[in-house]
Amino acid sequence: MAVLRFPQPPHGRGPVLGDPVENLQVDSEAEIRAALAPLGIDYERWSLDRVPADANADQVLAAYADEIDEMKRRGGYVTADVIDVNPATPNLEAMLARFDKEHTHDEDEVRFILSGRGIFFLHIGDKVVSVEVGPGDVLRVPRGTTHWFTLCEDRRIRAIRWFQDTTGWTPHYTDSGVDKSYQPLCFGPAYLGPRLRTTISV
Image 1: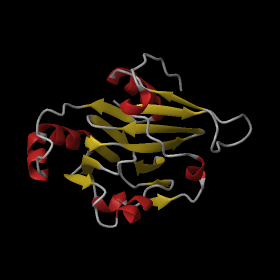
Image 2 (image 1 turned 45 degrees about the vertical axis):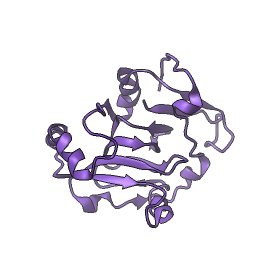
Image 3 (image 1 turned 180 degrees about the vertical axis):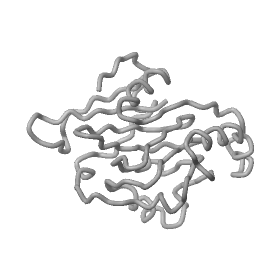
Image 4 (image 1 turned 90 degrees about the vertical axis):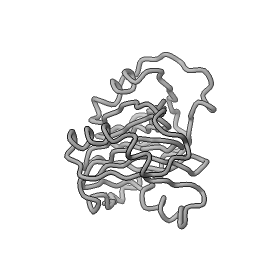
C-alpha cells in the first residue's frame, strides 16, 4: 500500500530539511484515492497474482493484457512496456539523476508497480505531497504536473508503463530548487509497523 506524506513547513517560508512531517499509511485503496483525487492524481490497486516474480516482460504484458488495453482506452495511450531497474542496471545513478529534480512531462506518467518501491514528490499549487509506491500500486500523474521521482534504498523497481508518445516523457526542468528541500526517505511497511486507520485532509 502507498504511503502518503504531507510536509508542514512553518508559516511564512518554504519547507526546509528538518521541518516536521506527518507520516501516514492508510489501509485502504479508497482512503488513498480520496486523498489524492483533489490533487488530480489517480490511484488504484491491482492484483499481483497473475505472474510469478521471475516472469519476463512478455509474460507480464500478456497476463495484464485486458487491464493494459483498458488503461489505453481511458487515457489515449498507444503503447505499454515493462521497466526493470535494479542496482545492476548500467548507468543507474545517471538515469535517476534525470528524474530526481523538479520537472514536468508533456504526457501522463502512468505506472503499475510490480515490485520494488519509489517515491513521487508532487508539487501542486502550494502543496508538496510525497507518494511512496510499492507492489500493487497504480498511479497516474497527469501531464504538466510538477513533480520528481526517486527510488527507495534498495534501488529497484519493476513496473508497467503506458505512453501516448515516448518522446513526451522527456523531463522539462523547472530549476526551482524545491526538490532540494525534501529528503527522499522511504517509509514502507518495514519502517512504519502496524497500519493505522486515519483520515487525511488536504
